[in-house]
Structure formats: structure tokens, C-alpha cells
Amino acid sequence: MANTTREWIEHALENARWQPERQVISLMMLGFVIALILGALYLSEVARGATTNQRLRDRLEERDELERQIEELRVEIAELKSLPRLTERAATLGFVPATRETIEHLQVEGYTPAEIDTVAPIDAAPEAIAQEQPYNETFVDWVGRQWANLRRGIRDLLGG
Image: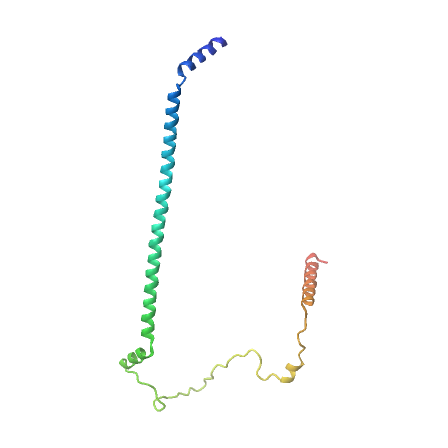
């Protein structure tokens, strides 16, 4: 039975064998289909890149236009804040320049102006400042002090 099955398979394969011309044509068609697929992928990537570049160019132009508008607004604000413009606007609102005769000072009873905070007391004696020791710690001294603090901290953490 195994022999009959083998003969049957060989007979089927003999009839199905491709002729060399068919193999060449099939390989050429397969190559053509693969080239079409690769070409389509390439074109889609090129189109995506072109679209991205166009969007980027549009955004850059929009940014440049916005920057130009911002600069125009800054110039307009500077013109509106100019002293001649402010003086003219104040005059149209009825304001006049202040003179010594037109300034009125008011005294409010119980009001004490806020004192300016200082870092060091103003009445510090010059002798106390002169008695302070000059700073003469070296880097090695500082590192040694830091190392000792670290060891002490670890010893305290470990409970020893």
C-alpha cells in the first residue's frame, strides 16, 4: 500500500511540474508585484513627508506673522505710554501739572509710616564687628567636619 501511495504522489507531481518558461514568468510577476508594493510604500512615505513639511512651513509662516503682530502691538503700546501722549490724555481729562502752590499735604493723626526693615541692626557697635573672628576654614577642614557629621548621623540612625 505504501508503494501505491508513493506512485500516486509521483504521478501527481509529474503532471504538476512547471515548465521553465512558466517559472520565469511567475518569478517576473512576483518581482513586479513586490516592486509595486515597495513603490506604493515609498510614495506614501514621500507624500506623508511632503504633507508634514507643508504643515511645518505653514506653522512657521503663522509664527512669523504672529511675531510681527506682537511687535506692532508693542510699538503701539510704547506710543500710547509715551510721555507726550500721557500728558495730552491727562489734559483732555482735566488734569493740570502740579506746582508747589497746588499740592496739599494731609496729616493723619495716629498714622505712623512703616519702617524699612534692615538686615542688621543700625545701632550695631563697631567694636562688636571688629571682635568677630575672620573666616579661615580650609576645604579639608570643611570636608572633615561634613564627614564627622555624616558618621554621627549614621551612628544615631543605627542607635549606637
